[in-house]
Image (tube, rainbow, N blue to C red):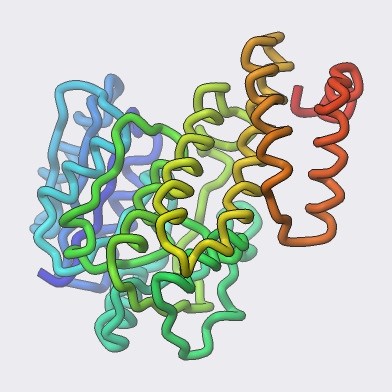
Length: 324
């Protein structure tokens, strides 16, 4: 089997027919589509079984879980089931072109790489949501270069934006205790644990339905923001032991400031002062060790730092009133 496409789904009765048709129209034949139903309580199971019974497409595999244990667990089960040499992860509320799988596979097979990254469009606007045009120059990037790109905010970790060798996942899985940025942690772990060869592609074959995501930043909980901080600290701990990567640690701290600011804003909106003061203290301490990518970011972080150091809660609420 060339490729396994893993699709976790939970209460997806509104999207299941669309994603099923998108997969059914794929021109690639040596592929399997692994649906993992994460304990849905709506009509997902009924609709999916009906679709499977009415088609004669042996590329589909269906695994129904008795309980909802989260998307990370569902993806891990999909990885265990998968028989393909390469893996692609898909979100059930997105769409893609008919040659999506075929092109992803062709690129990674011909280039003999471990990962191929692709640009993709936002569904509503039809414009590029992530654009890798600058890196589509034939260059092959190694693990260290990919890590530096990520922490300088040039590499994104959307799972559907790449195809990877299945063997990379033999020693890496999605951490089930993490419900936000679990994709970031998994990809970073893969890059850290392997001598990766990767390339980037400018063309788009995937339409990202950003409006329907439950993890849009302004809908995140305090706990999810803390989990993002936890992810940063896990990566930071590993990278600290690699001398050649020590120069990107300040950039990790800068990313951590974003997550801490999320905790702060969310805490103020809920009048949760315990979490506010905890995040405030960490922000002040982390700010001194961070390094910013752009001048605009530097000014933004400086203003946040001064407001927090002086504990200007009223001004913070005014500045972030649209989010609060």
